Length: 334
Image 1 (cartoon, rainbow, N blue to C red):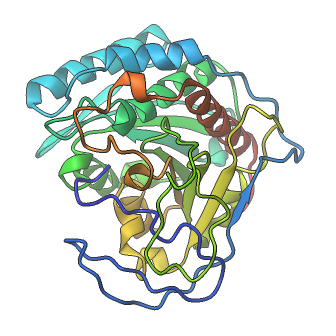
Image 2 (cartoon, helix red, strand yellow):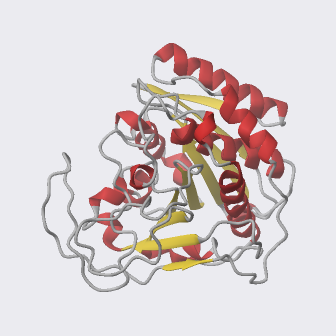
């Protein structure tokens, strides 16, 4: 995630009224009133869903192992792009390299059967900070996008499936900002799913952190849930993460609708979903809450051995289920 303190979920457990949020560019404290719509923490429930293919834990972890190196320098990021594009080509995709001033994004798409149905984009950033191999941040997200490429690349759906791997997120969301400047990418785009850190859990009491002075009691002090942060103007995107198969193997899902495109909550704008919000495109961030949970955030210790296999697999399945639901369902609003 973005190099500035990734407190994107400091407002995770605000239930409806007002909260004082401490945040700034350098993380100094200030007070701002915030009104947030109702959010939910729940097990995914069955609601007339289309059957989704099952993810492979082995393949997910293999990608993370093969990306077990820092992806910061131009040479390291080029090596990463070679790996991603090679994997996509093996799966029948035709990835394109899209250069911008400070880096290179990767883009690929599989056309849908309904030209009027628009597209759903699934994305993750592939770069790291200079000292970290970034197993969770963000090889975990890259692995899930590659698994979606494998599972859904040849599966016909009404909507078009697009994939993006963003460069230079850690330098200030540069890849996603460059991506949205290409207006062709935004045409008929009905939703974006961005994954940034989806592989770490903690189960001991108190391991999940929260804002100081939170005026409500959090439902859990354990970091065993998957958080989905979305723009309140595009609630069907958030709803798609609950329209999924019920399974005890899937982690609880917490959904948080953010009003006013994050104007009052800038800490939720520190990943690659934010540039889409500014363009009026619905986007969600799927995350394990980053530094509010993991001690390995932006550290050399963010290695494959710290990834929770079961949680990563369940998180990936939640995303696959939501993606299939969005690809299959065409409605006036997305």
